[in-house]
Image (cartoon, rainbow, N blue to C red; front, top):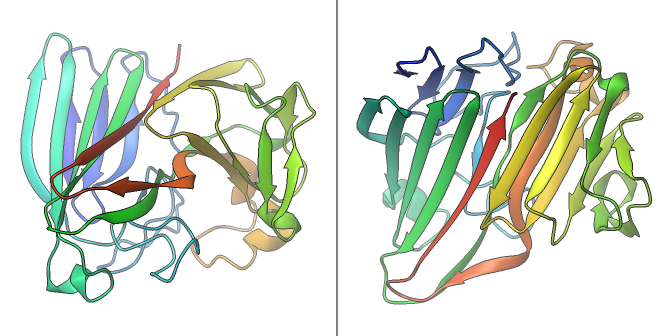
Length: 268
């Protein structure tokens, strides 16, 4: 595990498996990420919570493994830097016989994690190293810790079209000025604005994304959460996933071309 420490006191923990952020504490002491106490830290097993990296396929949006292989692959730690502005760690994932067994593409994925003050920024870059174009979908599957899911609202989604996976994939339009969470929520919002705000009682979390043009909002609710061995029965009350994603229009990269997207969280 790599531990990032900024001179202002902000910290983050990152596991090479999945280049997975499992903990972030802001300089002010806020801890905005949820990590299940039942999370399994085992080779080949996704970690429940934090920020899983989804690549090269979101969920079941194609023929590959659900959510792709990046979240369980062993990423290579490249560098760690710290200065008066914060701290940054860089991880890379290259194609290998293991990845090509699922997806026969030559690629380089780079994940950069930056912390400092009251902010966390996670940036994913993908480069096509092959001689043929390829396409992918991706997401930063961010688990936001909340005190009580019943008190949570998300602002910035009003008027957007979304696919309601919890309702058989029906296409709908968001009519609420602020989304409240009632039971299971599994929505893929398309062409979302760059800025969203989560309100959890008196607490506020600001989310910003670039490159990722969609946003997924997910909470399994009381009944469905019972099917997750790595969640306690009442854990659903303590998190909401707000995922920067690219789903509706898969990224197509020509040989030698690259793409990048990022999501930042600010806990004022």
